Image (cartoon, rainbow, N blue to C red; front, side, top):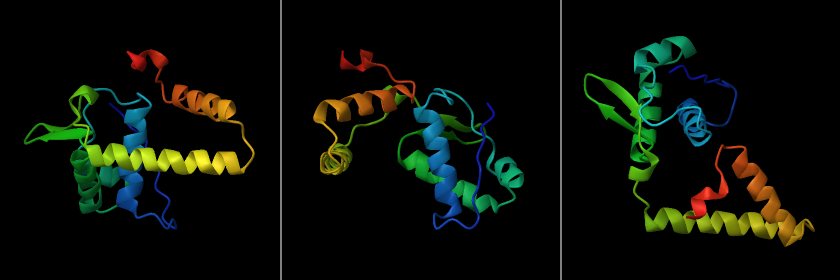
Length: 134
């Protein structure tokens, strides 16, 4: 599976986070699917002209988040989202972030129903449907 990662050298975001965030987004959007193999650390580092340790650090972050798993000698693969543990602290942090977005939207004068539609539209952009209600 080919992934496209673009590094912004002058960014305030560290390069390893740029890589991790872009891979995470590709997984969320369905561009990378369960079982897809990520490029080898050295290969991706060579393509991006960065230190292999930077890619390794990004992969470690993705593994700690449960998005990928590394099999020694085989490579790094996208994990099955159904197998990712749902940590109560993570869910709480997500709810808090959503609250902040809601408050910001309401303060901008956006109606609650419009915020809901905006959220639905955005989530559809990530390839997710409302079937997840089941």
